[in-house]
Image (cartoon, rainbow over all chains, first blue to last red; front, side):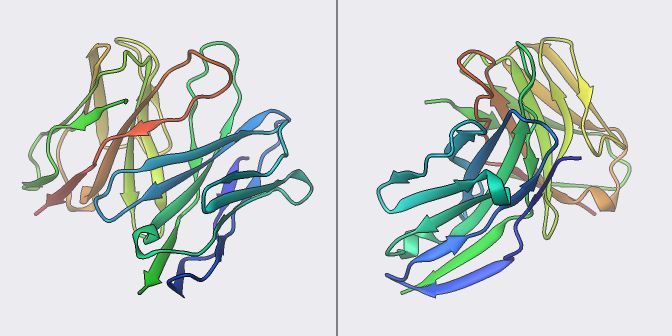
Length: 118
Length: 115
């Protein structure tokens, strides 16, 4: 069965600290996709990144970076030099690849609340 | 940019009422989804639709139904609202075009209270 685990319920850091959000997934498929979303206090989930199971290259986008390791079934998210605006709930999600016309169902983790203190 | 619009940000209804939550997307997406979000449980899929008039049950469909008469609109219906349906409801859409599973795009959410 598919499952996404975000063991960290809440994390509090002081501005400019680096912080890593953990995500561990379970799936029996060989082809799958992993996602990170950000949910600020306003409520809307904002898409951050998509990774497919064949691409284990780490990715960096500004202060954000993602570390995908199939050997440990993990897809961790690091924010460097955190800012107050990074305060949000972050969700990791898994989607198994379907055939053409896949419905892209997502399985979400329970989320990590990140609080960045000034 | 993709725009997913939910009809209400906040809604208060009474037990036993029939409640409609509306969602509209403007990107001609094939897939649409309804989730509910509860503290400590993350997002759980209620129903989804991959085409007009098509619907599939998600993980927690009990007490809900959906309607998709037009491609851009996906409605969630609480047939007889109960207090345990007090929650945040999120609508999302995605396309099947492009390589692989495309990301879902979400609306702002509707915070529904059943009294």
